[in-house]
Amino acid sequence: MTTLTPTADRSAPAAIAERPHASTYLNGFVNEVHKGLLGLRAGWREVLVQMITFPLFYLLLVLFMGRGQLKDDLLVPGLLGMVALTFIHEQVNRVFWSYLGDLQSGVLEQTYLTPMPSWVLVLGRQVAAVVSALPSALSVLLVGVITIEARGGNTPFDVQILVPLAAMVLGTCGFALVLCGLTLVYKRIEIITQFSIAIWFIAGGTFVPLDKMPDVTAFLSRLILPIAPGIEATRDILLGGHSLTNLPTGWGLWWVLLQPLLLVAAGVVLFGRLERVARRRGTLGRY
Image 1 (cartoon, rainbow, N blue to C red):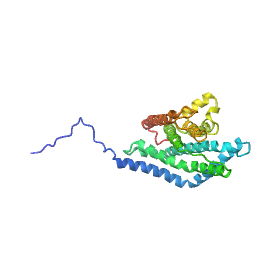
Image 2: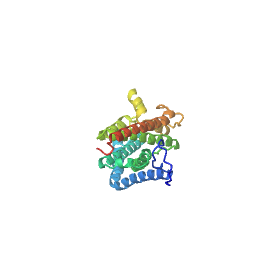
Image 3: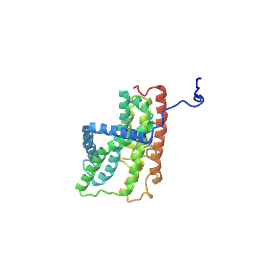
Image 4: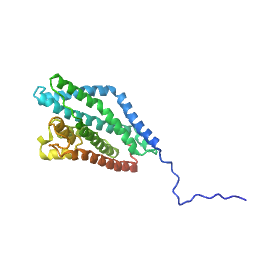
């Protein structure tokens, strides 16, 4: 007599691969960071050139603003702006070009063939880009400090500036997510990153404080640009001697903390929607 085995419930969902374990998430994140750092090491010559040119650009700008003289009253404010400008330039461009490079080489689609959620890979790319941006930004800081000290000045420091600095890093990551989401759907948008550099430089408060700009420009900069509130807060703390809870310029500490969170939230939402559009169209591997 034939024994009948019970059949599976046809109403149950089809069997799927088990969800990745926590160690798998960690490995995927670490692999993305490692891949980004390998790119940093492979391009060490480019990094070396940037570690020379960005500080020179800072000194030339101070000379230009000082009409051919390195004026002491311009060195510190210019240094604060140039460090922030260098960081956002490098961080945004590195994460953007990592996505664009994968698109151009046709390997980006492979990352979606694994059970790993894309947010893990995106986070790894962001961390790698932040680390890769530090050498250029720190070189500007080092040259600025050496120049100020050599001229008999003092470089101010206050541990409170770590808060606006962290806010700038977080907000920059959110802005980078927006650009990466756009490049998944809209091809050949490199001009956006190049154009944004001019916006950060002119309207980001890097060399001209926002309170010296037209009200509309200052409003939009504080609202959108991830480095603007942080630069204002850093200047108030280091140059004005104010505390985090008593910032005279800008919109206060609450906006320094809230703006990067809003930028990250907007970046996550926009990236997720554009990512779904690209996957639905099947254009992740097309450029």
